[in-house]
Figure 1 (cartoon, rainbow, N blue to C red):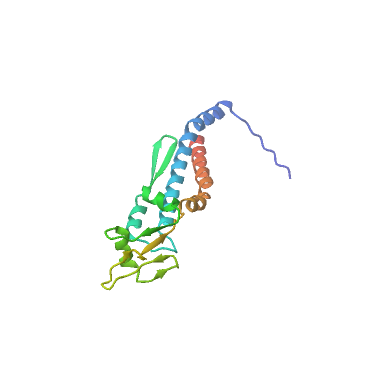
Figure 2 (cartoon, rainbow, N blue to C red):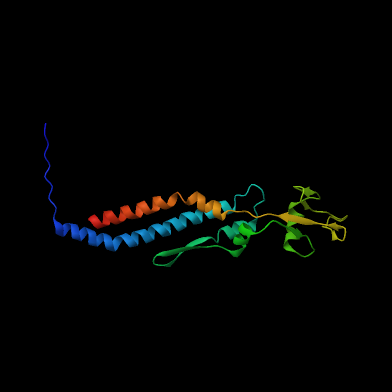
Length: 177
């Protein structure tokens, strides 16, 4: 059995399709990049509040909700987040002395008992239950970074080709009609 197919190409129709694609493809790719920024935002929020080594506080939950994706210009989308989260991601491990009147001292009073934590942090309590910070008996917390930004970028990098493919497909569908 033989099948013959005859194809004809109208050059005017082809020009119309390519002209529509030239107009629509940049817009659809721009929408795709913004979609990727939103996907990365969701991943950043999730990784901010999932930390197996540290307790998650109300402040960190509130800060994670401030991570947002915004369109800065036609072909530029940015992700904005509080500076405190950037510091949390990139700080060097260090000791924080627990002096009277500091927020971290109040936090340590609520969350830590009178013990060594991980052989580095030391919270010493006096007879009335307050934290001691005197010569010879210094209480201090050893704080380490929570590197969630690079982890989030790595996790969501698989979504970029998928978002671009969706945008290009939308441009071809609109361009063909």
